[in-house]
Length: 200
Image 1 (cartoon, helix red, strand yellow):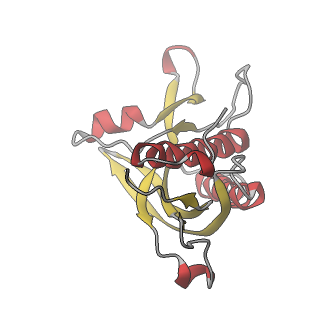
Image 2: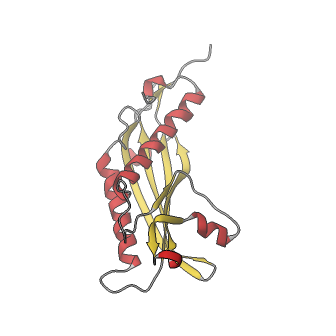
């Protein structure tokens, strides 16, 4: 059974509590973006990673961003395309009065807000006016934004009080001779208030 707010009685338990919120966020993304197997020919499904990864060698980095469920060509000409979402930690805040106008921090309890980062990359190609990477990537980002808000608690009642602000911006990233569309998003997750246990 997942940890809940009332189970947080030590610093280590707070770390576990925050990780549970991240697992909920990943569950929402996977549910929305990654349909169940089997693989369907021609599908353009992203890889979803549970952390933000990087490599100084861009050719190696590009390989880590390729999805086994977005393949162009067939046989020996088949190529996995760069198409991924990565979820990582962006910060922790305990003073949330300014955002909400209220909070659950009271004598004996403390409320935290976690900022999660969602980086995504979608390999570019010419496409057509009706079907192109910009349109498909934008649709995925819109779906993620809506799914996160609609989940209300990231499927983690007792851990997440609510999903807060979602912001995002887009640009391009180069990988050797290739170019990918890049989205850098962040979402605030307000956790349920946890008890503050006095040291023995």
